Image 1: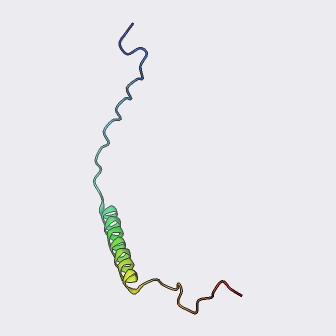
Image 2: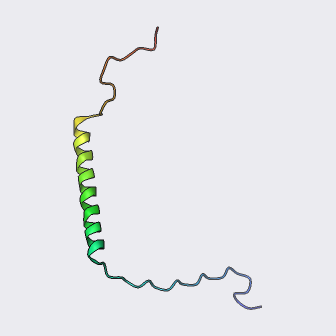
Length: 65
């Protein structure tokens, strides 16, 4: 009996991907994504400081009728 005959076969390694150079459009797109993410984070922090928006601001109703 051979050593690897009955066992699970080892997966083959995938070939390494070539690093492609980013052109100007890719660089601009990535920069815009970073800016938008920073803006969203800032808005989320601002909203957190002010408290919940639109929830429980009025007269609360009781469960009784």
